[in-house]
Image (cartoon, chains in turn brown, orange):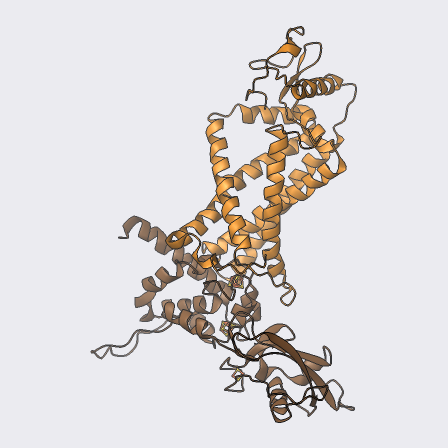
Length: 260
Length: 286
Ligand code: SF4
Ligand code: SF4
Ligand code: FES
């Protein structure tokens, strides 16, 4: 990654932010001129704005609100639209962004309600993960003993699925996932695949498939395959969707002939 | 395409999944198989009216044709109705920031679906139901009769007249048929994901080659039909047919339906009786 102007670093660069004062408020734009330092990322630019909450035309304003946690692209909390595309602010480097223009645009994701400014409320995603029971059931009175062995190819597939950090990029990019509909979206479908393939997690497989063949389930996917391209963790989401599609086919045929 | 209706997750309630899968199935099997068949027969047009006539007669001689037709109508109606709902309730295209080929493919699938629906409707309204749409009147006759009373084959000429009516009709056919074959071959590709037939990226890519090949083949068939229909003009060999077509159309426009039921090309019918025939619909000449 080559800095854009190694010999003449810019003194400042401009950030345009779509702001919103509360969940019901209307959004509006503000611009900030941020003092350049080498190796900045979008989070450190936002920190600079928090320390100097003055717009480019000199008006004093409130600091821009955002969410973050790990600062190393593993928690997903800082996901926002950067120049239109959903990605993590902590791994979005200013030098790299400036290769595409000297103004950087920040907006909150559009598929989640906004709490304030760049801070979305992703609870729908977390609820949907509960709906597909994205876990291995081990609660109970008895010691279940050591977990069963997993064949290496299952391990390999499950490892890829397990990289999901629930950031929401795949949902933001999905044309079938909207602010108001009920589609589960790619991430929960991927987690269902992850836990259906676990020997103990498979105990809940049929229950997961009931959810996944219900309204908003896997059949709402329109195969635009944006999710897999938007995922910063390279989770093989389209393979997960096809695999869950196969499980759903088998599940519903079985149900037709032997279900209650 | 920007509707954010609150219904998309709930269409069909507890039958949601079943409806989606039937939507997929109805598009591929009855409609798709029919389209392949139809485009293949049409391709015979490039070999001349006689070969095409043979194919058309073959279709008309199929047993249980009415049953097949009803089945097709049911399948197309079901597929189209659900398709329109799925397209307009809750899909948000976003090719601006996600300009990937697959995303365009997704958008195109929805656009071609709507175009195909409009096209199929116009196609059937003008050729099968013989509607007169503001002067765009191109009924399809399998058999016709000259003013002198000679019975002749008219399938090829009817199709040629339909496509040569105006440049925009030819354009409509080109766009319409391209939409149909794109919609079907892409639908076949995504159906394999939907039903869980192709899972890995590699499998999806292999299947894409096959569906792409099908698209190309169907394109060649329809191009042949298109060229055949546009180049079938009046010449020394077929003036009988063209005259018969004009005569049939005039009679039809005047409200006279000529009953050629049971007649074969080469037969003669009494001319004096023709213009006064009562205006009754009959199925045998369409
Ligand atoms: S493949 Fe399905 S889940 Fe992924 S972006 Fe497309 S419609 Fe959404
Ligand atoms: S699958 Fe990828 S894009 Fe989707 S939530 Fe998980 S990490 Fe984010
Ligand atoms: S802060 Fe955790 S991913 Fe950016």
